[in-house]
Image 1 (cartoon, helix red, strand yellow):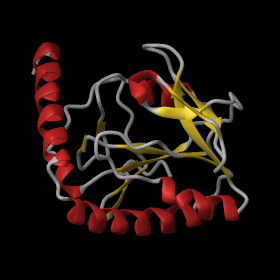
Image 2 (cartoon, one colour; image 1 turned 180 degrees about the horizontal axis):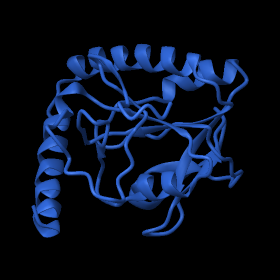
Image 3 (cartoon, rainbow, N blue to C red; image 1 turned 120 degrees about the horizontal axis):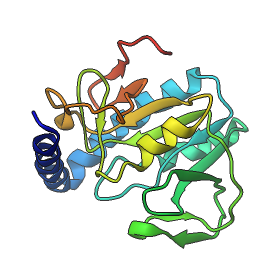
Length: 195
């Protein structure tokens, strides 16, 4: 496929997958999210790394925030991403339970205080994904730019529902494969052996 065809295919796949995710019933989403939370919690508990980057859920994504209580109890630092400029990298801000929040770009909350941290582990939402652990996001490239810029690269964990599995996302040179992908059905580790 030519780059323009891939871009159009991705746009259509993204729209289809988001609509399907939004259509999942509340009870089904609750069950699936419970399974993802269980698997993700076990994975995080077994990984070294003090600073954990979570995310604020958007458009019926899996919500990783309930895991924060356990992470805080383990004396780990929890951070949330903030978009500070269009087409830029994300910055991760330390997040505490009582933190004042501000609405950022795309109306996604982030901690108001700019206490910047560098995550050792980053949990990333998926719109779609493939068997090689490449993720399809919303198309803005924020996570890919951020992960490419962080040195050393953090451990990356994509989270989403199994129904978002695609044959391929048609990875491009800027796409970053996840080290792990966690769904309600399974935990996938990258075949590339980086972790």
